[in-house]
Image 1 (cartoon, rainbow, N blue to C red):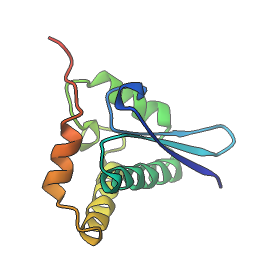
Image 2: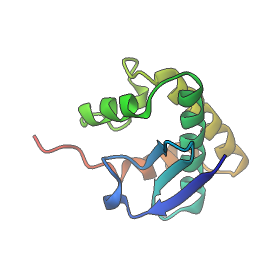
Image 3: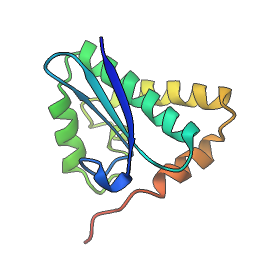
Length: 125
């Protein structure tokens, strides 16, 4: 298995998100995390993406299905929280893992979420 995690400028994400995962045909996982100015928050997002990708892969949820849902709901800051998301359960497990590591890194969960939300650019009406 090969995993690549890269911090990138937020505006270069493929769509409106602070974390993105791609599973290539050869099985390699690429994770892209927005540079939010906090290595701990970036690490938490990367872990979230890795857990979510693994669970989706294991459960046969295609990355394109995840991406299509995310892109079709630009009004949602975090589409995975929506119970209609085809990867909702996997997303929620990843949130729990992220929260647990945040505790160990002494990252205030609310502050972490506010930081990530500050990068969200809602669609223009």
